[in-house]
Length: 136
Image 1 (cartoon, rainbow, N blue to C red):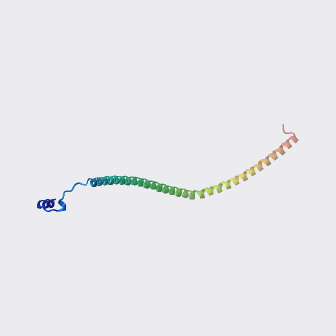
Image 2 (cartoon, rainbow, N blue to C red):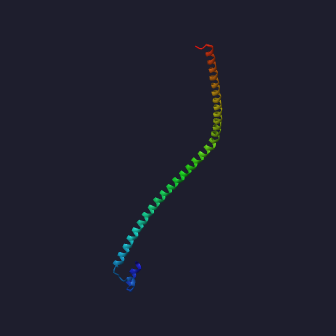
Image 3 (tube, rainbow, N blue to C red):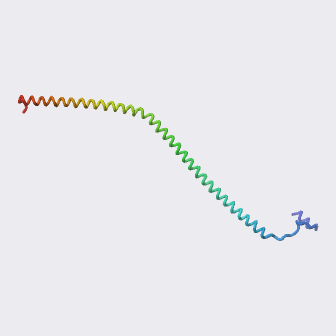
């Protein structure tokens, strides 16, 4: 500014010292472009915010899925370990119960035979008592 003042006072004719009319169309275009730039910056800022919100939501969902997957794996491991421990005992118990069932069935059959023999013996006794006349 100081140089321009000195040039104006010395009387030299420079194109820098010419007074120009303001170019209203250019000013209007610059203001419109600045307004458009501000709108774009605001839209970009909003889009960035929306992106960040969606990204956080997706990351949370992925973390939840990872946690569920890990819980499922832990549960599967527990169940597998449980089955590995319980299966031999259950198998042995089943075999013992099968053996016990077979023994009880054999015992029942023997008792039924004994009862049948006792009934036959009682029938013979009843018949002999009837012959003898002891039965009253």
